[in-house]
Image 1 (cartoon, rainbow, N blue to C red):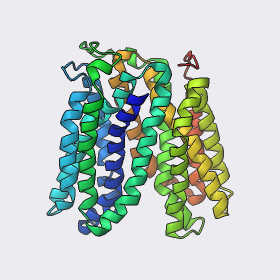
Image 2 (cartoon, rainbow, N blue to C red):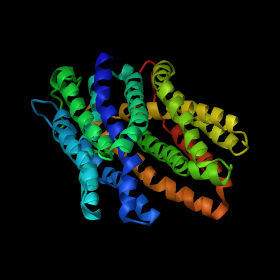
Image 3 (tube, rainbow, N blue to C red):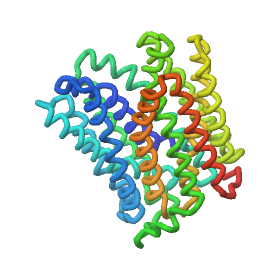
Image 4 (tube, helix red, strand yellow):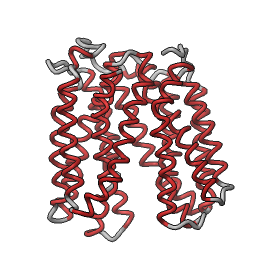
Length: 389
């Protein structure tokens, strides 16, 4: 598992970059654009790019065979470009150059994101993949905490500093990956690059289809809830803006703390059982949140919600990979990000419409309903799983 920690630096750099991007780029856009809706659309460019590009890149990496391996060439190309464009973001001259740098960053990040994640199952035996995914998500969570804690101070000192820091982390992470990961040596599928045309019927088997539907519904629930929670806290619970935003810290913190244990427990009882536990528990938390008026109780429920979300999120990607062949890991990684990106595009506006129609009281009922749809889908994933896998 030592190599998983080294590989985690790839996910660390991705999470750090997106956290800083989401936190501070809206301030740049606000200088030129008064419409919050337009700013919101521009901030979802990464999801649109992921929707169309990452499945293709993932499948292409399955069919790549170089002296550096299947995935590493995409990291070698994408990470330096991402470091360049994220560093250029604060030096925009006008809206056109800002949007151009944003788009170029999104494209360059898409080049290496799926291959980076696909490296985990490539170098990790099946029985250890849930624990490995817990480790890399733990490192991603730590990166997000560092981004918000350190990034705000850097931004206050100099608006370019967080982005230059992100560029440096991307380059350092690439250096660590090239130093510690030898894909030709470490990959369990070395020399097995798939050069034939994609057998899409094989990839979209019944377990995979229902699993992808479940992933869509639980990400719609999570993304919709997260996007509107601060407004829910201010307008429905009567919290101050800082109390409302701070409350989500408990959700994120418990997710980070439970990331590794979630993968460990799944390796004992099975990924599907762990995901069902997470969906059921998070749906219960969302339903209970409708009856909460105490800030302390809100924080406690959100803390447990983060634990249940870890049960779902940590085990979903390894589950997607396990329902296919070892030669389709990149393809399935792309499919995973396609569905989660589609949910990220769908969830916030859909839940926003529900709130407009029915008031904020309906937010967590809608989130719970989406989770119940995910539960129906996951029960239809007929897949024989050895808990040790």
